[in-house]
Amino acid sequence: MKVPRNTQVSVFGHGDAPARDATLNVDGPTCGVLEPLLAKYLRALAPGQILEIQSDSKEAADGIRAWTRLSGNTLVNVEAEAGSRRARYFVRKKTPQT
Image 1 (cartoon, rainbow, N blue to C red):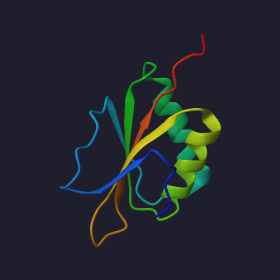
Image 2 (cartoon, rainbow, N blue to C red):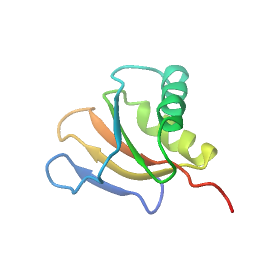
Image 3 (cartoon, rainbow, N blue to C red):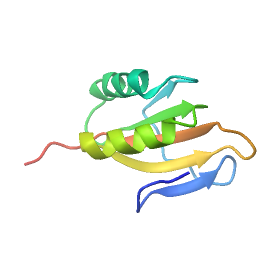
Image 4 (tube, rainbow, N blue to C red):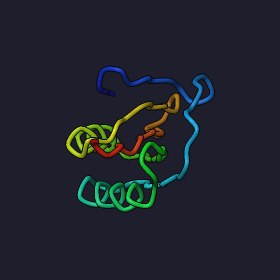
């Protein structure tokens, strides 16, 4: 699983997951469904809050990484479940430019 630099990667049960403000469970969707859901859920959060995305889709890692880079949000942590395609992605909502 490729993740951007400065992103912590851990395995379920071994890492310290960041505190999250909301959780989105999206098992099986493709990128065409995933990115609009991410945008919708992040719009409801305040700048700096964290959204946890849980997914079993192998395409989710690339889709979330690309979407956060393009949208200006930050992928702060990825936790992969050992022996499974399931993972948790923690995205921090961007703060407005001053």
